Amino acid sequence: MDYYTTHLKLLNRRNMKKKLFIFLSSIGPGLFLVGYNIGTGSVTTMASAGASHGMMLTWAVLISCIFTYFLIVAFGRFTIVTGKTALESYKEHFGKGISIFVLVTIVFTEMVSSIGVMSIVTDVIKEWSRPLTSSGDGFNTIILALLLGSVMVYTLLNGQYSFIEKILTLFVTLMGLSFILTSFMVIPDASAIISGLIPNIPHEANAALIVTGMIGTTMGGVLYVVRSVTVKQKNWTLADLKYEKRDAFISSGLMFVLSIAVMASAAGTLFPKGLHIENAIDMIRLLEPLAGRFAISIFVAGIVCAGLSSLYPHYILVPLLLADYNHEKLDFKKWRNRLIVIFYASLGLVVPIFGGRPVLIMIASQAFTLVVTPIVIILMLILINKASLMGEYKASKGLNIILGIIFVFSLIMSGIGAVALVGLF
Image (cartoon, rainbow, N blue to C red; front, top):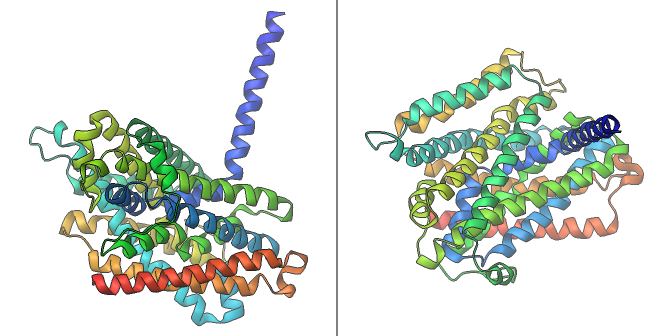
């Protein structure tokens, strides 16, 4: 009897592991988006908002994540039905000019992000490691950038897309656990989070830039082009439409939870003290005395995982898009793709070696992103209403209304953000 009971337990464990593996593999595209979207820039933006305004801007994150859900579903559904990605279809139906503009915008923003993200990751590790070094200077950022970049390049050039998905799943899981655990350690009053769901804009001079920055980190047009490509890589068919919706819900839901967790970590510690965050280093310097070494170590682990989970998609995105644009299969054995990955990884050494912060380039990339988002949305809105492409899966009246509202919203946010950026410049 004991033998059969033990054997049954083993079978149940194996079945549970198998189901978990199948579930994780079915949400790979969603986790790719979370890893791509919740990077060091998003962490800094959310922490800055929490430190300066508490949970007042929770509504902005919620709205952008809800809108992102519908857009993720629309772009993924289009690719599943037609078998073509957004970029490929833009080229076919709207001409090379539009598709090249979108492609160039993505390439430019990826270059800037590769510089900025690695810089933030190495700076954060250096700041955290100061007590661990005899000089008090922390670990050398050049060595850190070389080490992290080399490991990432090695795993990318020696793995397949499915392997990269597994790496991202690990990093996103660790990132989520780190931020959520930290937020519970220093969580603000629950009523503050609830009251933050009521739309309200701070009166400070840069409030518009903060709000558009928060929405921009979640609703960047590049995200939806990426969604289309990752869905195609997954080889989903019409039978998988329900999985695509579930994947989109999990993806946008995780974006909301992680963003709020970071905001709450800052709101529960820095906001009551009137302390503000301008960059990632400020988070470590200001949070540690208030939250403690253990909590800040967990938070740093979350930032590092956020950075690495963001850098992996940054490094492979251009080869992925070029393969899509040229109707090729993604192959990291090609020298073109290898050189692109190495080039993007080498950009991470720019700030550690030469110093400074590429503020003006970051501003320019944000301006490009703000411009391209409404374009990406309206083009897809046109495509999903073509009966010749979508057949019976053509967009419904309800979906058109929702996407129309989202387009107008993105247009308004782009205008406000562009004016705010010009004023800042």
